[in-house]
Length: 484
Ligand code: NDP
Image (tube, rainbow, N blue to C red; front, top):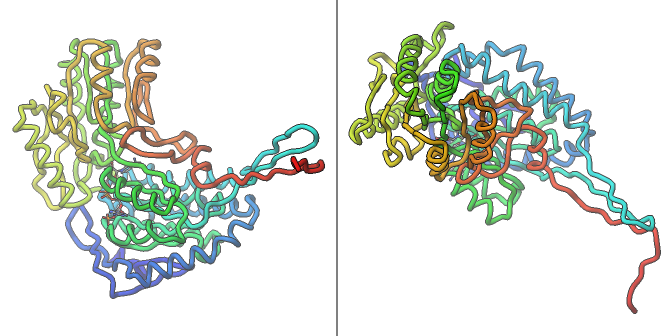
């Protein structure tokens, strides 16, 4: 099998196998063909990975930030050199078109390695004068062993978004990818070693939820960073709380995108396409509730349908293809189930709505109009190519409806009225907001959610605070005064 890795796990600088673990079949979503066979981690593998990370941590943290940063930046360069091969692997792992994976996956992972590699040397504490010569200084310290648990939609990116800041701060990591997409994190681990990362600094073990759960509850682990759904986030957060561990939770969403009458309609349609159909809709921050002001509703829907007709659906390895399959049969069935609910609950189907008759797990880009706030498709995260268009009349009304959700990951507004744009954004209950654009996530900017969509932030300088802590040191230059 072309994509069969040398072994299932990467621990202590090398590939490791234990065939006693439950079988994991990796399926190419465009054909349904099995492209690799792996094994879930046994308790012995979990033990080996945690020991390796624990043993490697002190020496890694003792390197200077410059040295750690150099290794991360070298890994970033290697990722960029191998971008095409890594993208082919990512396309086979996820089904996402090569047109996307060559620009959004290994490249985004490389950005994170480069950015946090660059920051590593500047991570310091501070000096706080107390008067009379006394002072405090703070030492920024690594947390220890960090666990990363990934979702299946951006496996390379997630492995790097968690690994890069963790390693920059002097932590070591055990990363568990989703069992649906287990291949690319192994490549990230290989590349880090090739770039000079000492053994055990970044380990990858495969497994289902039970493996993730055993990592989270282990006393050797200081921090857990999860990308996944809200139900899993709840479980992982609770398990981490038991050991008072640090957490970052990047969870799901049902984000609103508001399009006012005065918006540039082409840009708004582009935003709605990017925010609903990129990666076949399998993006956590997608703006799946598109509120369109009544005056431009029909023009918006017409232009959207015209543009969707130009989506090139097919073999994701064809560079002209812009819309691929969903990641698995299971996800496809979930999306098709929501489409049926949309029809049954009275939404108006204006585009798509069917499985595509070909091998693999293809669902048409689907648009429902006349969606109302209580319909299932407007309330639950679908994680598939299904857009709900809702009507609105006034700013006040749409603001309340946009925020009427348990989620708070992202939110966007399209308008040419500058003051209104900022007023709307100030009112959004969401961690990541967009004005006249949608779904950007550059490494320089904080990314994450409010409400049920998460805790903490990834990317940017803020991520450093989630992977390190301060030790406060009081220094007296004077005699110690005691009352007796
Ligand atoms: P899941 O929540 O099902 O799984 C996420 C990861 O957690 C998987 O690796 C999973 O393993 C693991 N896991 C499951 N149960 C446990 C447990 N009890 N303890 C520890 N780990 C566990 O999400 P999906 O993989 O289905 O991904 C889709 C979800 O991810 C969507 O809801 C989406 O919104 C969210 N997401 C959020 C992003 C963000 O940045 N906010 C980005 C991308 C996705 P296994 O797969 O083997 O069960």
